[in-house]
Length: 177
Image (cartoon, rainbow, N blue to C red; front, side, top):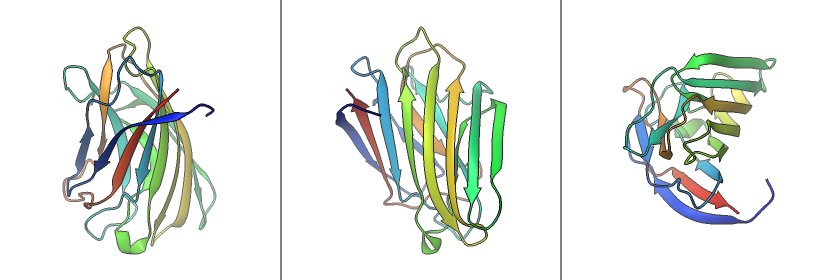
């Protein structure tokens, strides 16, 4: 993505399976870059999947089956795998969030037109992660939210409350000029 970046917000995680980053999307930008650095589980679990959901201008998390995504997962220990859905409740990040002792997990999202209520919200993403079962894993994907509401934030989540994220990971949001 060409263009200059302007930092909007840095969010530091706490121990939780729901990470809400609010008040970051506005009419100031059409494109946003989200950098998720060092996201890991707080407990010793393996091969767990994270998702991204959007938060509308009323503060509601969009958790309906209105997301489509397609992710190519590339593993150092096996062949590639295509992960896709046309009726998901989130956009799959293509990352495994294993315990911090097993490695560091990172994802970059570009989000297009989240605040524009006349169009769908689209995203592309790349991820790198490591878990002790599958080894090094890369992901490259895209997604769309099939709603034309104005989105002002997003949520990173794990559907199992017994697998919370650890504290201290960083989520940075930039506007792309």
